[in-house]
Image: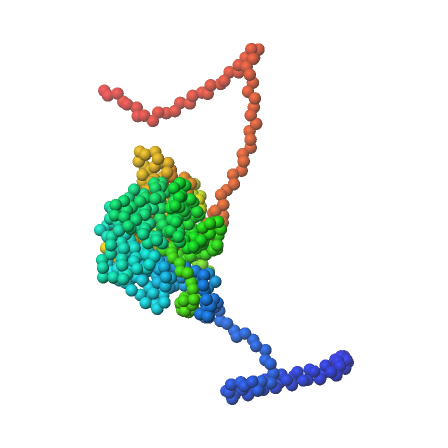
Length: 627
């Protein structure tokens, strides 16, 4: 007690005064808060006698939903966007093709329309105030024009046949487009001033003519045609009656697609490939020699002034970029486009588009607020196990429980698009690690429970086809399925020449060395199965290096739901690490060879002891002599 008093006497009086004042202030603040709670009146600024410490309110992690991340929209109606570009593209990040818009630094990738009708192949008019596209609103693909200034829409065509790939005349009074009539793709021209007039048929060959591109002069239309047996670039001279069509690419070993004109009309550019890898080719119309030049890698080119905008096609993703047409410098950094692209166009922004940018910015905020930002990690919440697939024919009809739901969604979505159950029969689903794998395929995803292989009999039956594509030095395949109803209500006409793997088994040595060859365009309507699978997270796999001689290693029918995992990590989900380690063979002791002595004349040869034969009883029956 005396010791504590002595310590208290050592504390200065000033310290005691400060402590007493702090205690009085604390008591007053507590009494003030209790009075306010009992009265229920709001706090006024004059009533605050002390500055309380603000503590964060507790958060219940089990019941709270994360709020959407606020993204700053640069779009401002008071700003002039002169010289900027607004990009339009059709893609399917949700499984259905929609038109999206994007302007770097101005507008994020935003869905243009609020409805869910499928829309493809946008095309901006020369005045930069309207957009033409193909949409399936009444169950069939028809052409529409949307006025960006007043948000009005008109229908251009109304037929059960497919119409698409619109291109504007330079004066904006006509539209050329492709249409699938009488079982063949042809190009038609439609007047926008006299809508009641029937369209003019420009091409009328027995082969497919499609993908028109109107020249800046208005007197030519470039398009793709298979008249020569290959898909090549042709030009139609609108002023000519005789000799109207000219083949300018003349590349029988290449597949040419998506022609586009330079701003002054002196060049054509298109996507060309030999084995499925798209390369942009520039064609100089004014030159008599050496008029074809390789420009870059990509597809869907657009030539605007000195810039060439295009889409880089990856194995499972697409990117938007541009290069300068004169020095080939990159001017627009690669921007990832969600989904698979089916149409690309751009609009030059000016002050008349300020209100449109403001409306699109508001639309983006609305779309952002409607998205669900809550996520579930099934791998953490549920134990990963193999789950049996219902109504599936396969040697082992199992997939991981975290993969079975994405597979069911894919199966349902494809069935809706093609009109028949494509994935009810699988060549493989999950396969035990004890089963043998194909030669050269040491890391086969089929062992992980995250992959499946569809039945290749679909191709043999004519209900499916594949298109060869080369991406990043590897061979990939795009799978198309024939729709059940061939009235134009399902799928699209084919515009890519398929690849036939079976021709390797013919007597032709050339097709054996190349692993098959391309065949002519098939009739009817088809659905891009690969595009749907990619939109739902199922990635295709590249062919192995020995695919040309080993059919199964083409892997055209294998799709994997990786969810960002590599093969080793995916295997560790269901197998212990010990099961994946191959035993290291211990080297056996090297036997030192003994020197065999050479027989000399003064040495006798050591006789070799012949082994004594052991009598082995015969297994044949002993015949008893008949009496």
